[in-house]
Length: 369
Image 1 (cartoon, rainbow, N blue to C red):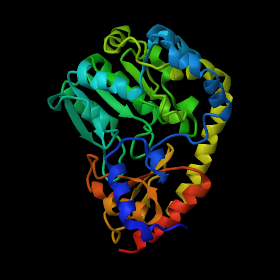
Image 2 (cartoon, helix red, strand yellow):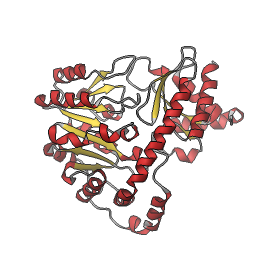
Image 3 (cartoon, one colour):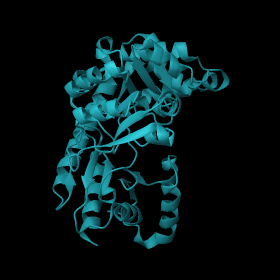
Image 4 (cartoon, helix red, strand yellow):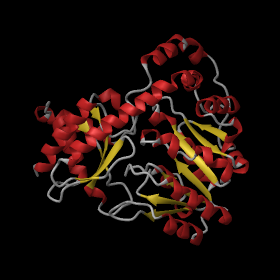
């Protein structure tokens, strides 16, 4: 395994740059086990198509929201009027957390943007059960009602824990919150990597639950982080209209539009790619479970949540040593709202070979203080 101890000054400078950024990692030539995306999609044929269309895509305006909703609807087999397309799910989160919700409640730890995008006095952080990190939906519903929340958020599989919330629990939660005029946002951005995504998604339950809203980041599941596509799906017209009002006329670029146009042809390849992600992830999970003292949470997404052994250094130190010594970058959870945050790390699954290298490097780092 390559070791980078001989060039520590340069590697240290690179670490500082990367730690301050939220992307552009490919420019720095390291193994990224931090960001969470599908390495097995899109196929090369899709890139060839986009290259052939580059002049049209660069020189012309893209379509607007109505046409984009039709394109996404063709992919997910849903009515266009129920869809709002965002420049990544992050745009939709910013609109809902920052402008639509008057009082938002979200279980933590979770994806930080839901809290970060909300005014400080408009958000409630509800702690997951510790140390299992399970969501007690009854306690969550009681707190949402007590706090008079008008928007509740559940990310499933959750980030960073990679754990699903059972479908039956989410249906119960929607029913419980509906009489209290509370919208339930279910963020299914990583659901395609679960064992039975078609049987687990709530996208087909919307007619029965008017307060249920689905968020989905396509960037992660389809491996297109640079194209920035996300969508919101709901049968609640009034809520949809509020979110649409916050989106500008050309929020999606031509490359993302063209990707959506050709995507239906490649859906079988997409499903196969998700199977490969699950296979690689499961092997990584088994290998991580072999490391002494490491507590490894069984994953439902394409990343794995771990608690470091008692004798190991802090998560932030482990993260830095992996980068400095092995050119591998992971996510520490020090910035998450949870107990003992600096004892937890999140590892994105990559290829089988890269995952194996990661396990060997992590074993070395956590076994040497």
